[in-house]
Length: 256
Length: 256
Image 1 (spheres, rainbow over the protein chains, first blue to last red):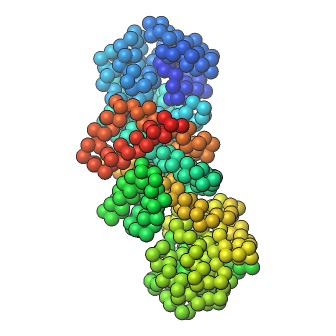
Image 2: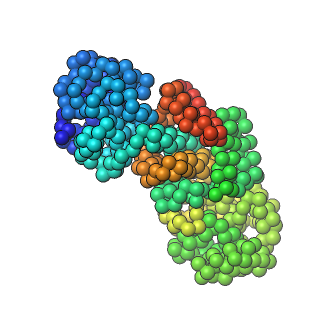
Image 3: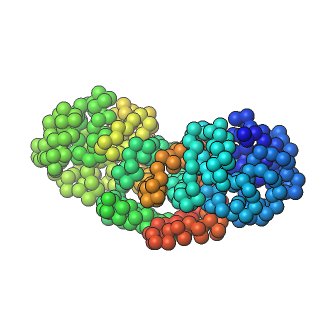
C-alpha cells in the first residue's frame, strides 16, 4: 500500500496534487525542485522537508515526477529509488520510465491547475497506466483516495486525451481571453459574458457539442460574418482565427 | 405597461423568449412565422393563435421581431402596427427600425438558445436600447420581469458584445466539438473531458482569463507542440487552428 510519497517538482500540478494527497491522509515525505525557492515554498505549505538534490531523495512507497516534459529524462536518470516511480504528464508515454525503473507507471489527473486556485480532486479523472498489474492496483488504490473517476488509459489514448484537453481547455480559455479583451477595449464588463460562458459549458453536459452549436457560422450567415470581420479589420490574428474557426464550424455542421 | 405581445419569428431565440414571457405572466397574443409548420408548433406550445401573414397581426403593446438578420428589413417593411417594435438581434443596430416606426428599440438577451433546451432567463443579461426614455422604461419594466440583469447597451457596444459572444460561445463550443470527435475516433468517452470543461469555465468567474491560461502554448513548449502537430498530421484544418491559436496564446502571454 502506498503511504509515503516523494514529490519531484513544485509546479501547478505538483502543488495541487500534493495538497490533495495530504488532505486525503497520504504523507508527502519530501519535495524536490531544482529551484530552491520553489521547493521551499511547497515544502512549507506541506510542512515537509525539501531538497534540491536528486541524490538525497528519502525512502518512500511512491515517487511522483511532475516536471516539465523537457526536463523529464534528465530527472529520471538521476533518481536512485527502489520504489514505484510515476510521471504525471498527459503528453508523455509510459515507455521512458522503463529504461530506469522496475516498477513504474503514469498517474495523470486530467484537469487545469493553477497554484492559487484550489481544486476539488474528487471528480477529476485520474488516468492510470502501470508496468504490472500489482503496480496498477497500488496506483488505483491511491487514485481512489483522491477521486471517484480513476481509470486505465494507455499511452496512445492518453496522447489524444491530452491534445483534446488543449482544445477544450487552453483554446477555450483563449476564446474567453479574446472576449474579455474586446469588452475591456470598449469599457464593457466581462461579467456580461459570464452567464453565456456558463450555459455554453453546461449545455454540452447533456447535448453533444455538434448539436449544441449556434451562431452565424452554422449557416455561414454572410451578412453577420462580414460585419464581424469588419470589426476585426485592424486585428489580423483574431480575424484569421475568426475565419478559420467559422469555416470549420460550417464544414462540421454541413457534414453532420 | 407592456402586457400583450406579438412575436415575429419562431426560431430558437423566439421560442425560448416566448416561453419565458409566458412563465412570467405576459401574454403572447400571436405568433408569426413565414413557415406555417414553425408558426403552428410555437403557437401550440404557447396556446395562442398564429399567422403566416404580416397583414394580419393582432393589436398589442409590443411587437418583438426575432428573425434572421437577412430577413429583418423585409419583415419590418410589412409590419403595420402602431405600437413599440423591437428586434432581438445582437448583430443589428437599432437604426433600421427608425425608418418604419415611431416607438422602437432593441431587446437583446445575451445567451445561446436551442429549441430543445430550457434556459433560466433570470440571470441572462438583457441588453436594451430604445428610441425614447418612455420606450426604454417600458422595455426595462418588461426585461426586469424576466431577468435581474437588465441594462442599457447601445448599438456600438452591442456589436462588440455580439462578436465577443461568438468567440466565447460558438468558438468555445467548436473546441468542445473537436475534443469530442477526437475522443470518439479513439473510442474514448467525452465524459472524461467534462470536469476539465467545467473547471475551465468556472475558473474565469474569479480569475481573469489571461491569468487562468495553462498548457503548452503559454511557454511555447515545442516538444509537446510538435507531438500535437504530428497527431494532427492528416487533419489540415485542425492543425491550422492549433497553430494559429497556440501562437495567439503565446503572444498574449508574453505581452501581458
